[in-house]
Amino acid sequence: MMKTPRSLHCTLFDELVNLLTVEDAMWEMVAMVMFTEMLKCRAISDTLDYAVDIFPMYLQSQCRGMSRLVLKSLYGLSERPDTAEKILTLMPNIVACLEDTRDSGDISLAMLVLNNLLPLLDENTLSLSALAIAPKLRLLFDNESDTVRELSICLFQYVMGLGTDAEKEKMKKEVWESLLPLVFHLHDQKENVAKAAQEALYFAGWFLKWQELTELALTAEPWEISECLLERKRRKTKDFLYQSEVYLQSPQETLRQDAVRFIGLIGQYVDGRRTTEYIKRP
Image 1 (spheres, rainbow, N blue to C red):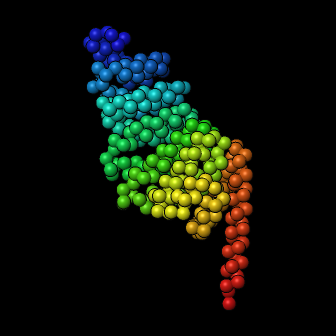
Image 2 (cartoon, helix red, strand yellow):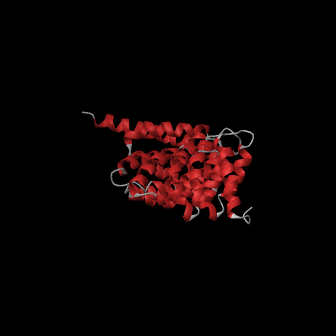
Image 3 (cartoon, rainbow, N blue to C red):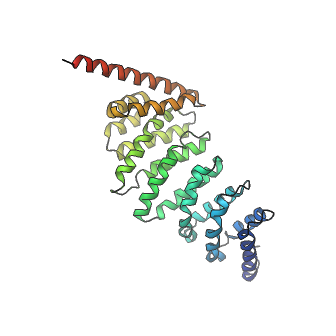
């Protein structure tokens, strides 16, 4: 097909666009397979506008495998300098894939595409996009897929440093919400995920200008970091308790054990503080 005359390429491409525009269930998968293959041909990169118009609809398709096909095509386009900027308008649709699908393969592809597109945004758009993506990534830290957990933590580490000064305070809130889950995943059963969590904690310490956290992250000792969290953010004790209770249902035994220990640590911390407050009373 790539060796056929350019005029035939254009005719075939137009026919595929017509088929995909009317959402013909009988032909849409076949048409999309051919359409995405033809997008790989640099000679027709000027017709990418058609893909930008069509892809949002098919990213939400109920047809099995359709969103994966579109995301694979977007990943290939995001890798090419001549096409990456042309698909930037699809960022909101790609971000939506992080929460609108339970397919770990789709989620992984969406994160890979975002990782390629984020550096192409202007400063203000980049900052706002980072804030929009951060909470969605935090929810993926506990995904059943090892790949999704690792990619979400690595991408979160990247986006936490993208906020402008005007948005930095909002990003700090997202980073604080991520700290305890990252501490738990220091004991993740997959070494790559545990390593990603350690690096993210180190970067979080740098971002928050919290030297003690960066130092503790180097040793990867969860209990020292946990105690440090409780001391640093006393008013977030209830939030930490809620976050740790979620891990009591984790499929990973090590994470369930860590949650039990941390809840016990919270109990000791609260009791100790109450005793201290009682002694200080006149």
